[in-house]
Image 1: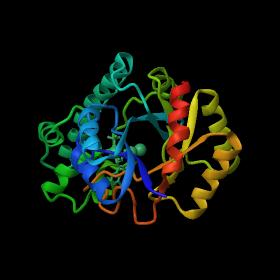
Image 2: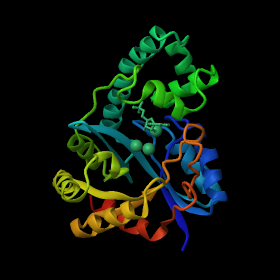
Image 3: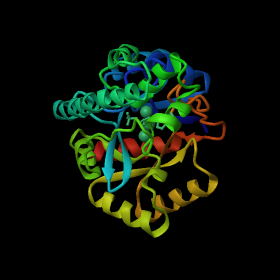
Length: 282
Ligand code: AMP
Ligand code: ZN
Ligand code: FE
Ligand code: FE
């Protein structure tokens, strides 16, 4: 059974490889279909289609939208979206704006901690409108203030660390509705971020399903066997689609590879048809 990868970032958001480079890596890993799921932007899609056609890899247009529920950040993946949908693109543009309001505040904090960085440098390195903390981490790496992106998050950028600034995030039901309105299927990414398990997660997923959630990311680079099993059981119990992906970012997550994650990831191509069927019915 061939493998697919439904969670990948490129230089159009906070990944360090271009869409073409990501698709070449996917080809080497014998991935037959993949979804580009950049944060708050869909501009990688045309290049991805071209590179996919060249290498015989099916491309699913996708996106990843961060949302907040209480003290948890829930990331909602959108699959098979009409990526040219005007309303969706307007929503995404306003989410990128909220990044531009937050990021200079993070830079101010870093500067007050004595680190010589500017938002201009971060934007130059990013080279995209969807600028995230991993870009800031890379500037700190380049300037040797930190040894890795993990080091940058652990010391400065993660929640609870001195340069952390939150940003305005939509509610999960809004992110789900925007994806559905653009003809896409909404899927809860890396469900461990929900910070609930067992009955709590069951209840949350039921609520999100009533809001239009179509699936759950069962297979993920960092999931333990036990987590994978729990999410699989919940997907079956609640009749949610099963998806999976590496969440490849390149140099800010150096242990994660396209298609195989930390080595043990295998997402079956059998998951693709149900996803496409659900989108066609949407
Ligand atoms: P932002 O979108 O600006 O809030 O940044 C969050 C993104 O940073 C997440 O989507 C991850 O891709 C990345 N991230 C979070 N924690 C870490 C970490 N410890 N190391 C590397 N990347 C991280
Ligand atoms: Zn990211
Ligand atoms: Fe995410
Ligand atoms: Fe992601």
